[in-house]
Length: 180
Image 1 (spheres, rainbow, N blue to C red):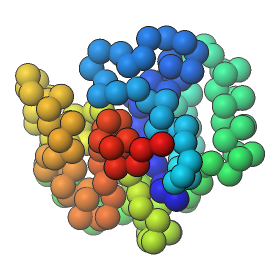
Image 2 (image 1 turned 60 degrees about the vertical axis):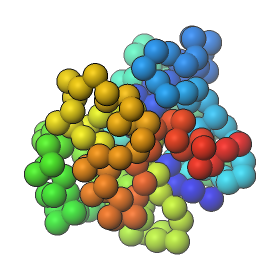
Image 3 (image 1 turned 135 degrees about the vertical axis):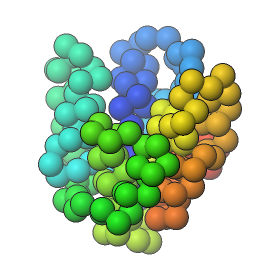
Image 4 (image 1 turned 120 degrees about the horizontal axis):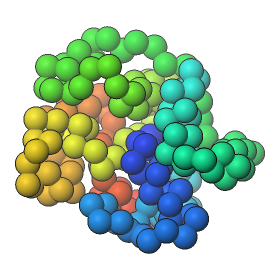
């Protein structure tokens, strides 16, 4: 079993692929569908009890609230979602800001939720799956090589998050580590 914290851009890709849009879209490292489909290992999505991640996911589906409600209900019934009460994690979050991680955006909830999942169930590997440069090296947002950086899983922010035993990776890298 692995815990996956699915960033909004990856969730949007899962949604778009599920409703039949082109997969993968330009800029994505691969098809997002296999991130969520597949056993073993069983993949458990982790969300915060405060609803920040759920609200962000819901925004990604636009006006398709029926799809989202059905999807989330199915996942809950199948015990594929773990909800954790997130604490501040101030001492582990502060270094991210010094590396350029943006303040005041929802992305920090993915990190806090990943840290909480890890502190709640230390023996279960945790992966924050994102194709967003903020989770790797926000200072390279304008770089022509940001796709390479994301695909490598490297960067100062990813490294700092990794010090807390959470692996930051893109779609294709996660699937290399955990193929279906």
